[in-house]
Image 1 (tube, rainbow, N blue to C red):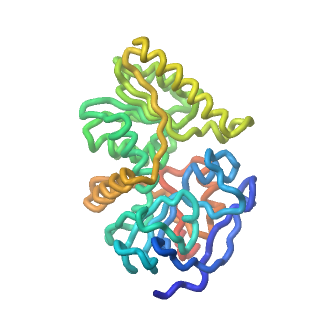
Image 2 (cartoon, helix red, strand yellow):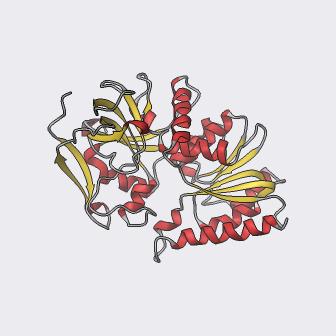
Image 3 (cartoon, rainbow, N blue to C red):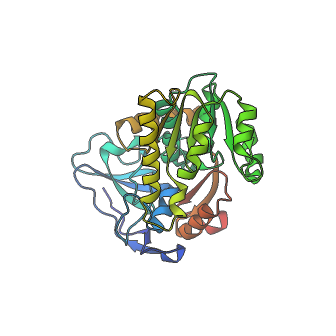
Length: 347
């Protein structure tokens, strides 16, 4: 096995804006007994990296560190105890940090096979975002054909896949997004509400007078009370992420405390029969066996054309700072992806 002598990686050196995003060269590690060295073909840009940049992530790594939540790439070397993978195979993984690099070591049990005919940027769009959407819809909410759901932020990386997966499952999807995103979203089959110019609550009541069966809300505590009132009896509200963490001046955990308080209050009321069967749950994706099963199914759906992730931008790995700026600006519809070796002229 030939280990490359050096590779590019992106490092966050401290708290701040994108001025703390730096590029360096380092020697890729020789894989340990259960390690697999992967040459990264594509790495996703996610809300988690924005949180980490500002020190607002719940499991904040110590600076300096290499960020990068998910990746797709090719196996280049394996450890002495690895029997399930070999050089040349394409794989996906969600290491949560470290993916913004040309070469990444991942434990063999954390990998999922990727079909050779799927574009790497498309494939990485369903690793973190796709599994989050799938599990919210099918494992957390357990939606059924004919039900109606509301997706806040349907133009984001998770929201787009929630909408596609919902429509594929025979679910009616109502989604909120700013008007500039509507054109890109019309072909998905979602009923769109412009959250900037329309009253979301009133419009949802117009579209679904009896309430919606499930709501997927990444907006934070302030949005949850409004969402709760839009549920049908027996409906469920699912909070994931919290964009409020970026705009709050207090400790990073304060918005999550607000989420927890609402969850505890509504759960207590539910136990006393005061919620009409409505329930709220908090969700976050975990890189376990269930994750790998769900990711394999999503990649199968992509390979056969049942799921079409939307890639907003492909940028060179060295353009990580620009990618973060674009993500924070919220102007892109779909996933922003970093591609090692991509020429700036093709970005």
